[in-house]
Length: 253
Image (tube, rainbow, N blue to C red; front, side):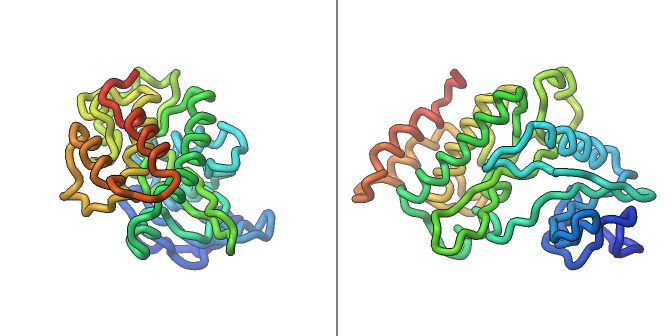
């Protein structure tokens, strides 16, 4: 992504500093001049058809409605060939970065975060949306000081609405290796069950972090889970293990 020509997009969003860059655009700390508030701005280019499709999906996902554990865009602006999705700024980083910095999380903390993620997915699925890219890098942690962590599910760029099922064959990658359910690997990427499996995979990954190339195939997820929790004295370990065995079952039902 090249640096844009203006620091202010559409006379409204003032870009301050880049926070991250990826294949689908760049994320900036910005100011929404309409509300005089700091925000996060995801900058994409309209010249790329795939990015436009991601923009449409993310912007549409903003219609899911307010939820304490979902972070869809609240508005968008466009100028020339640049489109910007605008979201509240979350200060605690991603779950992926937290694990990279601090190592594996305890079963009690994983259970706390998983409860919030499943709550977010329940709201999405009730609104007939499937996220399709649930992974630790898309799970944001809001700063709470000494309070319990507050999780937010973000990045709706490949989300799919029930009415869009016929559009699945677009050439896009529908998920991230290591967090794709067995049926998603076989091409079935329109079911809410794949989000549920991915939620279990996220919990397993933060219990037992692995480099991407060392993550086992989905069929070996349950073996990995047993090893991760074996001998744990954490009071949440038994209940979490039982739940994850259900979430990570090969049968989507």
